[in-house]
Each structure stands twice: as structure tokens, then as C-alpha cells.
Length: 587
Image (cartoon, rainbow, N blue to C red; front, side, top):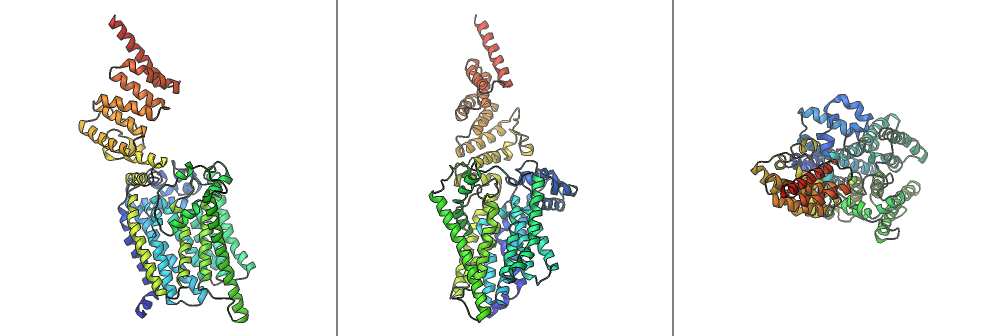
């Protein structure tokens, strides 16, 4: 035990261990590719190709991405530009971007350890071995929690990681602060960087107040005065973001109205609590919540979520009040006002941290989603700080530490399994569809990933570069067979997808298998009967196979759905001419 305490007393050794542990858990992600928004934020983003675009990155929305939904994350985009320059290749390669994510995550875990140490030191005037163990376990738990897999494995989530590092750096600077306005410069700088990395960092302005009041034990009036600069930084960022984006929210209320959207957020609360504990299942896209009917105010899911929020808030307030009463009693009468709880203030601070950093993603300002695992990256830090405080109140902390190590080992196993879903786009969306069938956006992205496969390039030569679905005129037999095999496998996963059906029809047609091509074209119009293009495809198949009479009705249906459809009008004229010529030849 003495040897363990000796090692734990060396912060640099603990920090090195945390870094190595993080790299060991997540290192394999360095070999992963670009997925989903990575392609538009990095691969096809011209802004990151030159440092001359830095002013635009901070002042123009289109400099973040010319294709993605409106989001203002200039620090992330500027760092992409730095990585692009360091890499030095014309086309960005994913390796350096994935490595960057892992290193930022390791930095966040190390800073969480240091923040936890400072919190205990501020409270107790020293550091017991149990407190050091609690801080180390919190950092390792944060490094390994499988709910962080999205943030670590998805290049796009660099904004979460950067915001996490900068927020913790600001908190650490404030915990080291020994009075004076000059000492606030670096905490304010870190907070400014965190805000411009990701808007979810804005609530740190209130966290700063909690640090002044709860840990520096300053008078209320002075705490408010010292918090004003942090509120000013938050207001500056919000105003700048408003100027660039042109509005506060990213989208209209998801549930049709602002009030209904907030009601529909409460059933998300127990899901977030489960994910904070690292308990599966996980999902890469919770967009299916948009398709669910609105919840009634007194429905079970809403009431349960409200109950959890009330309990969370009550527990936070109760712990703070208990700590304040004990501190006041000790100051006046040199005795405790009740049974002491070791680290009650740390637990209260951690719980408050969770609630504050969940506010930006609670749709108080409408966002594009109800929930996502990456939204928990900042809140999880507070959750694990609170858990570390609980650890110290057990009579046998050694056995609790063994249990915590077992949980962390379990999280490592879950993370190693979960992270593989992010290896490439096809794996991500196909596995998500298999695990959570019926999510429309997942199906669409899975099909896009299938079209981006190398064997599909002969049919769609421009797809991987521009996303164009222009078909090639001809295919060799080998190319055709590879494409048909891929599309047939895809249709087993998505049998009702009309796009896959009709493209398989064209692949069969280009390899001369006309009967199968016509049958699939008929199936495609059954799957998507409201598409004029699909009816035109069927009519074209009939014409090419010498069945103009059968082509008349599909072509007419295409024009009924889209009266100004020029291609359908031309085909209709061709069909009529062919039928007229056949009648003349028959006479």
C-alpha cells in the first residue's frame, strides 16, 4: 500500500498512465476511415486547404462546410486546417485526424484527473491516498466509458473533445487561482476557446460561479462580480455566433412547437442516465425519435423523466446545503452540523456540472436532434466527479476500488466492441440498421455507403468524388457481376428500398439480362408508386425490350405525376411513333 501511495503521489506518473491507457483503448481507431459528416467537413471542405481561409472560418458560415446543416465550430475547422497542413497531402487522409481525436481525449482524461485532485485539495487542505485513487478512477472511467465512442471515433466530434479539454483547463486554472483579477486571464482565454469550439461549453460561466462560491469560499457579492467576465465571454460568443449563423437555433422546433419539443425531451432523461453509466444498447443515430408521435404531458415517459430531473436537482441542492451548513457550523462552533459526508461539495458540484452542460442540448434552443451520445461528453465529466465523491464515503474504499476497476475493465471491453462500428461508413450504417431497424436516415446513409464501394464505381463513376448518380453507358461482364452481387446483398438488407431495386434493374439491363431488369423495374414502381422517374424507368425498359404497347401506361402515369416531365414527353412521342409504325407495317 505504501508503494502504491508513493506512485499515486507523483502526478506526472498518473498522467502518463492515463495517457497510455487511453491510447491502448482507442488506438486502433487511427486506422479507421472518414464516415458520415467527416466527408463534408474534412474531405470535401475547401476552407481547410489554406490558412488564408482562417478569417472566413471565424466569420462565414459556409466556411465551416458548404454542405452540412448550420453549425458554427470555428476552432474545430481551424484545427482541421492545421492537420491538413501538417499532413501535407492533396487529399486529406483520415489517419492523422483520428489520431488527433485520441490525443485530445487523452488530454481531457488527464485534465479531469488534475481537476479532481484540485477539488479534493481545496476541500481538505491536503490529499489523502483515497482521494488520489478516486481522482484516478474517475479519469480512467472517463477515458474508457463506451458512451464516448462516438466522440472519440468520429472525426466530426473533435468539437466535443476540444471543448472538453478547454473547459477542464479553465476549471483547473480557476482552482489554482489565488485571488486577483490578473489570475482570471487564462481561465477566460480557455473558456473563450471552449465556446468557439462548441456552443455546449457556454454553461461554464455558471460553473465558474460555483467554483468561486463553493470552493474558494468567497462572499456572494464578490462571486457574482468575478463571474461577470465569464458571462461577458459567453455573451460575446453567443452574439458572434448569432451574427454568423443569422439565428440562435439550428432548426425549427422538432415537435412542431417549442413547448411540445421540451415535453418530448423528458423521456430522453433516463436514456442519458443509462448511457452515462456505460450501459448498452448504443445507437449512432437517435433521429428515429423525430418520427415518434408527440408525448402527452402526463404520459409515463414524460412523468418518469420529470421525476428524474426533480430528484437530480433536489439531490444537488441538498448536498450543497449540507456542505454549507457544516462549513458554517465548523466556522462558528468548531463542530459539525450533522453527520459529515466526505466530498459532499464535490458530489454536488459534479451533479450540477451534469445538469448545466446538458442544458444546451435539451432543445431549450432548438437543435437538429433530440439526443446523441456525443452530447454526453461534457456532462460525463461531472457525473464521474460525483461518482468519485461517493467512493470516499464507503467504509471499505479498497473493496470499492476493486469494484470500480472491474467496472472500468467492463467498459473497456464494451468500448473495444463498440468502436468497430465506426471503422467505415458501410459498417456504421449497416450495423446500425441491423441493431435498430427502421431509421430512415440510417437506411439512406447505408445505401449511400454501398454506392461508394469500389466495386460500384464502374456503374457510378462520379459518385465517390461528387456524389453524382450518373450511370456509365457500358459495363464489362466482370464489372456487371460484381455490381449485381453487391446490389443483391444490399436488397437483402433493405428489400423495400426502391432505389436499390431500380439500380439493380439497370445493372441487369446493362449486362443484357432484360427479363430480370423489367421485373425489377416493375417492382420498383410498386415500392415507390409516387415517383414519376421510376414509372419512366419502367416505360423505358419496355421500349428497349420491344414492348411499346406495355410502355404506354407507365409513361402516361409518369406524366400524370409530373405533367412537365420533359423526358417522359419525349418517350411518349417515341412510343406513339413506334406503335404507329407497327400498325402501318401490319397492314
